[in-house]
Length: 278
Image 1 (cartoon, one colour):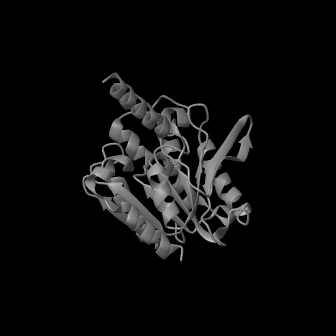
Image 2: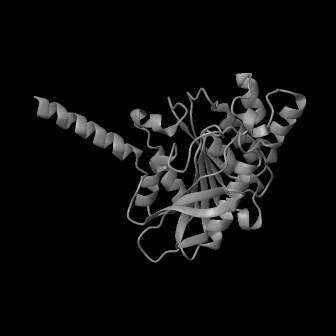
Image 3: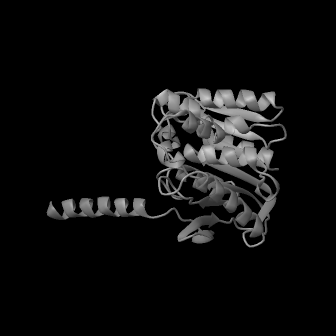
């Protein structure tokens, strides 16, 4: 009996330890420094498929309310599907609030795009077929990069998951700044703060000639309302851009909770990327 209890405890501990380990696959490299800002080392993990390439590529940006998370958190459900589908991909860290205010996080995403393009030959990347994928705060950041990127920071496609595209709407909905306080450097919901949030909102930077967007959003999201994606799609199309939205019926905030719904969002994402980055 004691042996059996010990075995069960050991098995549970092993599972817990395995869960703490970073995601790994043949073809992965971990903790590659893509920039150093002051004393902050910015790192990424890279996956390169077998074969000669060059491969269509995804740069992944995690969420966490701009204040937490890292390259192995939150966005992890996309790692294996992208790898199995034959994409090269990079998952990145960026500077977090409140230690680092806007636009530090956005600058880091732009730097990562430039780094991936500059090292395209080393990682079998096709620099003309790069998609940005981000979730929650990372969704905001990839959309920001998508609507503002030019030259060596422009990408071929953008996929924001449940992204707060209009930060003023987000703050008014909650009647609180939350994690955005550290990002903007203010605890007050003043006119100056609202103007800053409006300036930081991808919704207000939409213009003609942007790369195609695919939004993925649950209709039961109580953190970032589904209406954010609805309004973003309307404004994108009004400017003559391509924008589609996959709605997850019953989907809450965070793709990890969608498995119980039997959603095929991963398959739809892969299909869209293949079509868009062909």
